[in-house]
Length: 348
Ligand SMILES: [Zn+2]
Image (cartoon, rainbow, N blue to C red; front, side):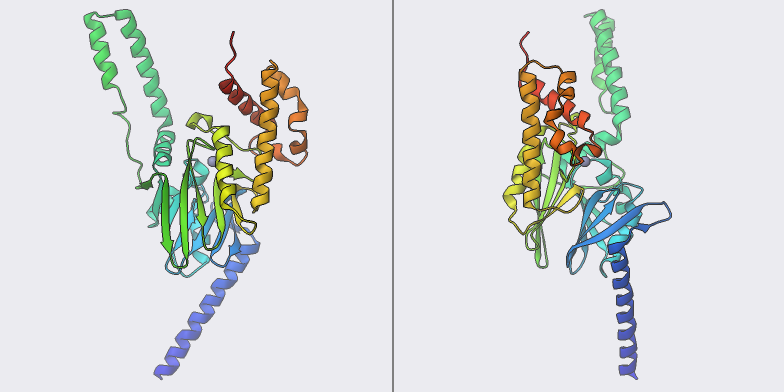
């Protein structure tokens, strides 16, 4: 009787597992829709590694023996579906989520994940950037108030009124702004390692590249590299200049990624299809070629309009669809032109 019960339980468990496996297969081939209308598709990279795509944006799920780790979590709309999809991939739940950088398509779901019991980890600067981005309007307002006060101080000079304005100016710092986010984040700087059964994941910080601080993840035993937005496969890269991103830092990041790869490494870009070392090398050549083209034109004294009209710089890549992504050819060339202006200041 006991034995029969055990057998029944075992069979129930087995059929449940099979059902689960079937759902995973469905998830592997189809997009899944939740009530909010978010499509999150799970695709297999290795036995314990999947990438979950939403609007061409990739996040990575590592299925450990005891729990699942997510690299990025999509935005607030896709977070519930991302968590459900990741949960279906194994019998374990998602315990950790690591943000690669502060952009909303990476961190927008953080509050949801936190409420669902997932611990969030991020680079220290990424955390600060999320905070600054969340409080953007308040910070802008504060800046404007300080500018007005500074003007008034100037015209009042060292008078009593000037002194009063000056103390008000000094008090008006970030005091009105909620410092912490409404969910906790554990932060790290430079490098961070996670040792799990049969896998070590190393997170490495790259400064002033796609944003001010980006992190990529390397799964040593699986030989899989999750690049975050340090690599946008098949499209021009976005450089967040407002948050201290730079094309030179971006190239340095690409070199660092290439240095970690061998010919078998599976490279998961932040956006676009799965890639390899040779794709990263081709991407590097694309950036170097276009950057040099813009720099040469700039040094010849050409204006931005003239550079934009010079189709030879991007023709080869535009033909392959590089300009059809979020960053259009014109935006990419304009960014390269601003970088050239910074690198070679013109003497008047
Ligand atoms: Zn980004």
